[in-house]
Image (cartoon, rainbow, N blue to C red):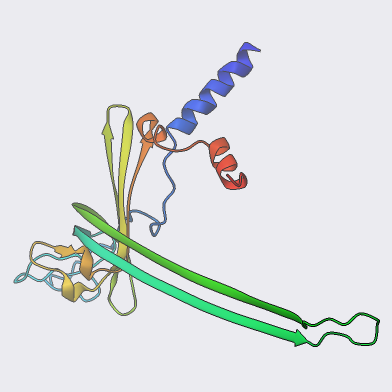
Length: 219
């Protein structure tokens, strides 16, 4: 029994330290392929080997090269709508009094009715997202058109919690700025994540049993 308790304790600890899942393009890093040594023919330039220009800034261009992403995301959206409907109707019926039954009614019989149906609704929503920071990513693939697929992760451990900043996207080499940097607003198919793990983060998450009752209970 004590051994079973020990196993359960280890499982719980591993669950608390689990890395949060990600939607970022995998892998998060890549190593450049090993290049063959240049032929010993006395030449300075060899076709087929990666060359870096001598008169321009060093920029990411090959698998394994690093690139600095300046995250400058600031988005805002809002929407507002309203609708209304109105329907009304009436009906009336009048009939003469029956004669020949031994009783004569002086007043006729009448029937009338009306109905009214009204509906009105309104809705509004707004959202704001601000995310700033810097992260270095790695070129994991060079696409056939020359664009660079990049991905990277930054992990920060503070006391009993871990914070993960992840980024991936496709970079046009022509958009890379001085210092081998590029803003996130110029990265296509960008995916940015900021997640955390640890007991501080778990204290802010609703338990699975509470989520179950919140979903199924009508009140």
